[in-house]
Length: 416
Image (tube, rainbow, N blue to C red; front, side, top):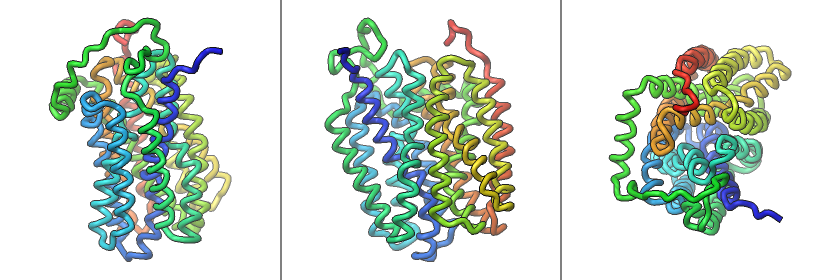
């Protein structure tokens, strides 16, 4: 019987680590109402804490990519998971809104950064040669898996017990994953006398980068990238991607549904239902990115997402369960489906060595967009007592993103 390559064990542990980190970010929407009721904090202030978290974990991405080269995979994953454990523990002690901003916005945002930014392409690039796009698709889809399984559970716990018990569940999962990482994660295949999955012969690696300053490495990657037009187009489209996903839907979808009389658990279940199609769509997107022009994949992903965001306000206003289900399916299919093609184009343009750090900067743009939507959505609700304009504008921006990606210059097979 043929042995399973250890790369797949690395993929599995990384998959579950990203699930735990991802649920801390995607769960923000179910905590807005209970925090508002218990502490009487302004909704825009709570949204600001989640916006800071989204922005911080995004802007940390390129530095995390550089630190991975310097410190190694295992120590970085352990340190990031320990930071998440610390942040969630401190959540039990908060009593002022500024503490929410520091704890959730700062500590938890920083802890989630590694798992939700550059870890997927790093593991795929270093542990896989064959099935690399599929590996990225599976790892990217893991955030959806956590949302699928845990969001309704968290909503039920909050509704029947307290938001503190929901945090306790996430804390316990983080502690379990800390020990799983300690037991199973290795830095590189070469540490075990292996080659990456699909590579026939060992290639000697030079570890020159380990002597470099990670901050200098991150900024060097940025200075090289900003000279290339494709970087600006990818970063601009990813800004809109973040704005229209984790920033808007991830933070405000549940509250938007509640404002139309949809119960908390039902709204969280719709978000969870998106996770099923997100898992399917993102994994399929990874498979497709190995086979088709990634620019056209992104064009259709953004265009269809924009159309679904324009449908949502109408579906809620009509109180139509059927239309809301149609939105959930279409939006869910391409929630994070944009990630594998974007990573693939970045790798084709900038090469294997530089792609992790440069993708980190592109993802920082994604999270800047997410932060704008998370805080902006709260402000729009404050002034208009409705989220409708936020979702309408996001749909229009998605149409713009589809134009950005299609004018990226196509790479020839030699260039790719």
